Image (cartoon, rainbow, N blue to C red; front, side):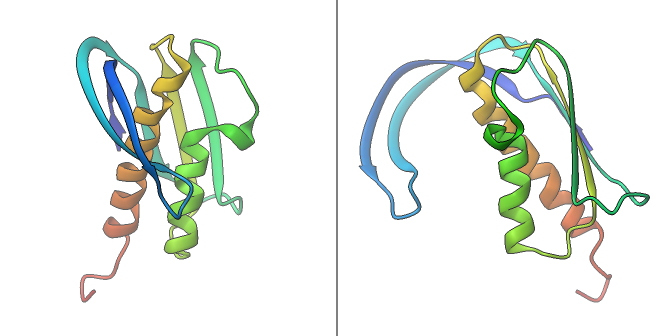
Length: 123
């Protein structure tokens, strides 16, 4: 599954409270811009590694442990251990590092699709 998450500019941000899971409740106003990254998530039937991540396009700073696409997959894998081995490819067009949040959401959506599409029809 391939998705093209839209980028956005954050025009206003208010942190309402910190949640028990470590994330924050926010109030925000976004303005969409005509720039998209590309996230592809697919089953890797020939791998024993739970996840393989690759990227092209703009350089992504940091190491794999801080990559939000990988973190999103790991959260889903923890909740749904039967998700098959997966390949994720990110083509980064958006120069803003913080917009990985959009890529993370697309990864979760795509990984959820993998989980659901691999379930037996009786489920």
